[in-house]
Image (tube, rainbow, N blue to C red):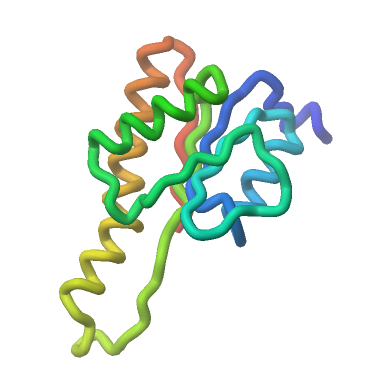
Length: 137
C-alpha cells in the first residue's frame, strides 16, 4: 500500500498541524515518506516532525506568507505539498456576531489560506516541478 502513496523525496507544509485533522494529515504524509513541516502557535504535538514553524496565521498577509514559505523551504529543502488546515470557529447567533469575530474567522480561515496558496504556488512553479495544494474546509 505504501507504494501507492509513496511521497519519498517530497516536502510538505501543513498549517494547524499540531492537533486534530492537521496532526493526522501531517502524520500520514510523514508515514508516506514526505518530509513534513507544520505550523504551530499555542500547541506543540508530542510527535516529531522535520520542522515546527512558529506562526500566528490569524495575522498573516502576503508578505508574511512568503516569509513562512521561505522558512519552510529553508528547513526542508523545497516545497511540493501545502495543506491549508488551520482554522477557527467562533460560535454565536448570526444577528449577534461581532465584526471583530467575523474578521478573525475570515483572516485565519480564508486570508491565510489564500496568501499561503499564492506564495507556495509561486515557489512550486518557479522550481518547475509543480506541486499540490489541499484546502481543508
